[in-house]
Image 1 (tube, rainbow, N blue to C red):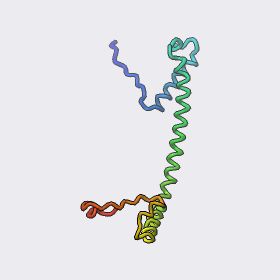
Image 2 (image 1 turned 180 degrees about the horizontal axis):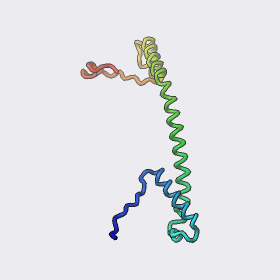
Image 3 (image 1 turned 90 degrees about the horizontal axis):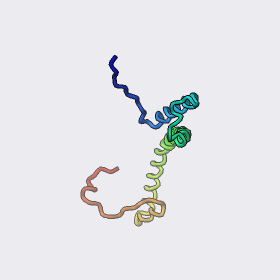
Image 4 (image 1 turned 60 degrees about the horizontal axis):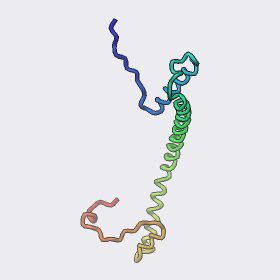
Length: 125
């Protein structure tokens, strides 16, 4: 009987790689002294790394979900904030028409350098 080539897939995705490592460790512990992995030289660093990796992966996943939720909530407020900032800019520009640099006191960046001819013809943002 001819032997065919066998490929053993090792995941490249960090979460999947950690999950595989956990399965390997589980089986190794289950087999005890009968485990073919009992003499692995890196056992003292591999086992704790798998535990830490799994904990950190779970924490990263939780943080990612929290970040997605917070980003979504933040984005709901952006139209109101954007409109409010523009309104306040317009109010302050009307108030300080002769000295627009006063808007810097409110945190605005004021560029009063002359526009180039290409900026004058460009559509307003």
